[in-house]
Length: 476
Image (spheres, one colour):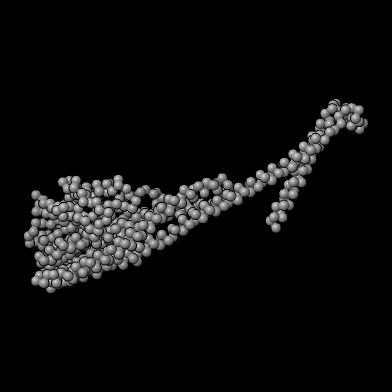
């Protein structure tokens, strides 16, 4: 049977303080969401010192942390809320009151339930890491077996064989890391906006440290928890930004299909529909460009947090190397430094997978912005050409009609004899009109109209031929 000596369970969780482009109202809402995870008696003064523009690490409580005890069970713990630039972090620890009594591994599940109770069942909107620090009462059992049992007891969705990426040493003990990350978004036509980060991704992270029986090791761990707060923050912000980039990719993919449809229809539409295409493209362009800019911002977030993560590992390593010289008479000085190289694998995964994938997506979807701009320019050019053709046709028509009317008016102004003694009609025509009972007085006017219309038509036809010959000559 495996028992634990002085087991501790810590939860590092992170909430967004202020996102890109958010206003003061959003900041207030984010602060309210973070404060809901803390006791009511400290909420009113929690953000009194949170007024600086930037702060890499700022403890929000004047007395550093807020402790708690459990009257029914021998539990004790504390809250440590901090600000990490644009993120709020909270370290919540739970353990038995200090003694060296061995406890079954199942006590970790009790700690977990107590921590969730203290958080009022509130979920973080960026991510969280569980940390188990314990000693073992039987030196004949391997630290790995102890870690396996701890992982099973916590029951957070991790499997040792599947989710165990690496291990190292820390302060003379063995340290194990388990992690699982996968996207939860489905490829569907519905574009419902996720309300929580848990709807976008599954991000589970657990560190288990099986330590030697040493009070000095326990003391150093308490100091290193504050060093780990920023480290885990950088890790979770990478995954948080990557999940945001996947959601943006899904939206951009849908918009890109609309762009292809607009481009494909540009040459098979009349002028009215073409104008609608231009309007649709102009409405889509700023929305598409904004999403593209947000995707680029997520890439920058991934990049800078991956760099900070690597630097923080180096800082922790330097701190480990300093401990023996600072504690020469401490027994733990003989078993340092530790080996945290297994944590560096995350930086390699970010560079080779997450960051690279987001960069490739940005490069691919940037084509859509250029296609939209070219579509708008091409549609405008086609519209202007067709409008010019219509204007030219209208001008030609006006010219043809004008020429016909002018010639017709001239012909109509010619005087035709209308008196009976003018001998206007020859006798056979006069006889024919009389037989048909058509008054002779109408005939001059009919002849005027006939001559005028004929002249107008002839003039219009002649003008049309001249215009056609002129256009043919210009084309040559």
